[in-house]
Image 1 (cartoon, one colour):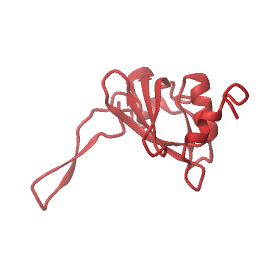
Image 2 (tube, helix red, strand yellow):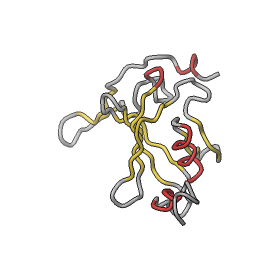
Image 3 (cartoon, one colour):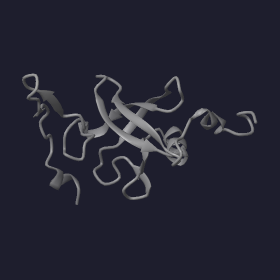
Image 4 (tube, helix red, strand yellow):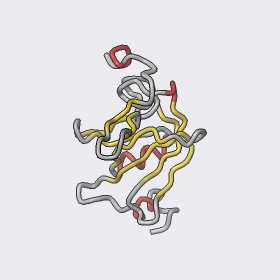
Length: 137
């Protein structure tokens, strides 16, 4: 079917897993910082493309999760990319409010493995920008 008759035919190129999901990496479009990894189903990906705002599938809640619906920290999508195997989505986003993580940090990747060989440990590298208690009510 052509895109003229089916505007969502581009979704047929996406390889969703057996649960109907695909991993989605959100990256800051300006800095290149990886902000978070989440999951999308077909509906989430279609809505993201249609609205220009990131929509994910919440596995814990079993429903669509419109990023920022509670916190106000929406993600404006500047670019969507599909990897070579068609099984990972990359979203280049503008992170509204500068906070992507539910911990109140810019990125969910705020721990770095450090330490001597054989004695590694996690070091927190990024500050909390806003207390999560003030973000989520």
